[in-house]
Length: 147
Image (cartoon, rainbow, N blue to C red; front, top):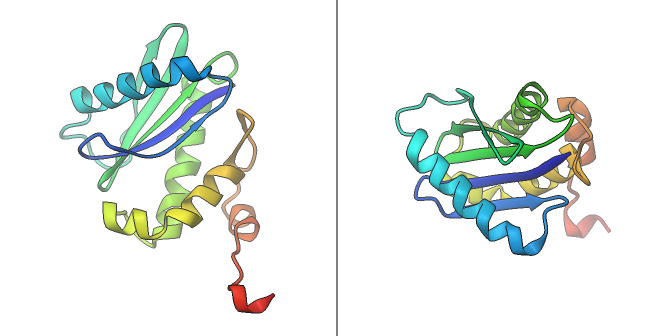
């Protein structure tokens, strides 16, 4: 199961988080642990270079993409290899939505579409959609005047 997808800025402020099957009382622990993990290890890392960690029998794959850090946490069938596929799909979707490697401002400008992408990629803790074209079709937003 994919337990969490978390995206933070370079200062460690969380921009997006999705938890699946994680009790509310444990979420604060995971937030602070992942932000500290990123602060300790992501300095000087190239864009999309994957780092792997494990904690309490779960796996964590994380990377930097422009001004944001992306963390994916999984257990059971979602080992390092499966999580690296998930994070690849997420980084590709973020780059597609933003049109380039995102700055924090660009990421926040495209926040709605990025959240829609995450919802289509990860559903109830499972990696649902990995095809870029399918994700693009599923997140198409129509302007409010078209209704």
